[in-house]
Image (cartoon, rainbow, N blue to C red; front, side):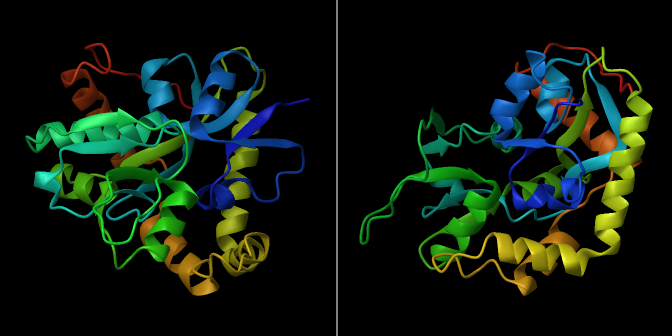
Length: 266
C-alpha cells in the first residue's frame, strides 16, 4: 500500500481532496523527516526538502506556489520591518524560514531570528508584541484576528517584488525506490484537475470542515479569494526558474552547498 503524506493546511486541499486511500496529514517539517527516513513513499512537503536532499522524483506540473502575495506566509510585526530587531520563527516550515533569511539578506536587514518551540505568541494589549513568522492556517487565523494590531510582511509579495518570479512553497516528492512513479504522478495531477474544476464544491467542503465560531474568517468568500488570487498549483517553467533562483540565494547565504540543481520529473 502506498504511504502518502500531505501538509495539513487549507492550501493543500486542491491537491489531495478525494484521494481514495489513507493520507497522513502533518506539519511540513514532520513530513520531511518521515519522507527522508523512508516512512512515507510520497509526500507533499516543503520545497527546501528537495533542495537539501535532491534524491527524490518531483511530480511535474504540481506545486503550492504564489506569484505575488500568498497571504498565509507572513511576518506579523508592529514596528517598521527595517526597525525589527528580532523575529520569532515558526518551526513548522524550513522553506518559509529560509525564504525569510534570503529576503532579509537581499534587503540588507539583519534582525535576530529566534526559534519558537510552541505556537503563536500571545498578543498583550498596550504592549509591543515580538515580530513573528507565521505560516499556513495559523497565519490566516492570526491575520484575521489581529488585523488592527499588526502589519503583515507577505513573503510571497516580497519575493515577487525582488525576484520577479513565482515562489514554490511545496512539491509532491516521490522516494527513488518507489515503483511506477509516473502512474502515481498521473493520478495526483488528475486529482488536482478534478478539484480545480469543481472548486466551489471543494470550498464548501473546506468551510464545513473548519467551521469554528472562533475563526469566522474561514468563509466561502475568503477561500475563493485564497485559491483564485493567492495560490497557484502548477509547476511550470516560471515556477522551476523561481525554485532554481531560491536555491542560488540559499547557497549564497550558506544554507545549501554551491552548485546547480537538476529536477528528476515524472
